[in-house]
Image (tube, rainbow, N blue to C red; front, side):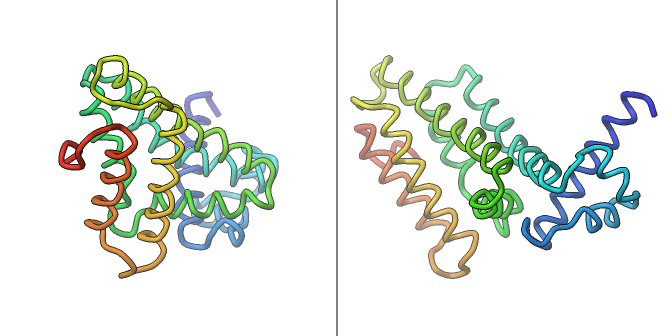
Length: 200
């Protein structure tokens, strides 16, 4: 198998693993399930990942990296900090029965028992907060935001987003997407010396 063919096969296995995880949950996903769904032998799955734990951690990281690529595009853009913040808040909101949020929630839960997954989850989770803190710091520097503690504000805003997004993703009809959006804007506005309407 050429290096390129191996990379394509690995990418396909990771995509399939993500689909299986969303359907069965991380705790109930077996390497045999991924192999069957991908139409390959279980030996090939082990060739690429060595252990079930490594497969799950890499599938989680693969799924989350898709979210982080969209986040990186916002952070690297030349847009002003307020525009970047608006875009980041929109990116974080679950849409429909969000596959992305299903993977995040599964990852957090299984991280309690799987050290390799906890390490990946922590690293990827921290990137959201670091990027949010950077946007806040840039906004403070140019006078858009008023915030004495950008890192702390990023943690607090992110904690509210996580809590509300989990409720929206897991519990139907507990709150609406509109409520979630309004409450996140309210919290972010209070942290950054803005009016909520500025985050519309």
